Image 1 (cartoon, one colour):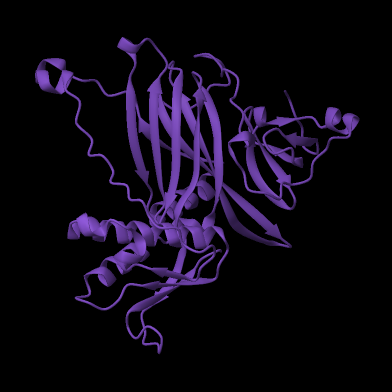
Image 2 (image 1 turned 30 degrees about the vertical axis):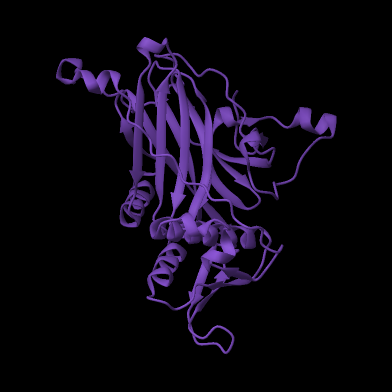
Length: 344
């Protein structure tokens, strides 16, 4: 489908209306949506006439995206087709497109659009997770066809300083004996992202790509032991505890073991500590889902081991926990920690 500067278009994934600012090349155009300009692939766009005719035109989305917003795409182009990604060698890639926001005459970098590019003849099952220090930002599972690019999602540019990492799990769609797998964790330092974006500004290119792998790894079976081929590692079963029911929306999480379980007399010290930490985590997540501003964790004083482990747990729950403090109060002394929850 061909477009020219000034054409009005619909973004297929989001149903947003936009306008073509300029044609970059055969594959990409510069698009403006709600005063935001960014490069977009031509096959992500469509003419809006059908939407207008059926009166089902949608405004810019005002809700969080979920997997239903990303339908499985149709098979991509074949090898040698003019729409295959030029300049990329065979392999799997994560590609990034900077999105700029125009406010008056001032241009600001607002978002990064992420794509997965399959520059191979494999049909893939893709499992993708985007993680930051604040928790999981996005997850997706889908099928990717040969020589297809897949729009993953966008992230706010502010998140580049929050320990961004991307987990890719790839599996070739083939017979069981021929199936291949690849797991890859991609971490990009903020300094490297800034350098890449600066290079794009200098070169005028719309995107940069990072190769995940050129192919699936090969395994030399002759170097493996028989136990590696036929013995599966035994997984340690997760310990579950029958916790007593807490009052709904209670602002206190009492970690005294007798308040948590009835059969604590038969538990070892390690099991008691594990149960207390599980109850603490469950209580915080419940409070977070109930939009409570804060909760009080009652851990007591004792030898301080429980308080130490609770504070370590709170530091790891950055998505839910904004800050916490253990200060003296008339009700708890130093035996409780107040936790303030994060919602922005």
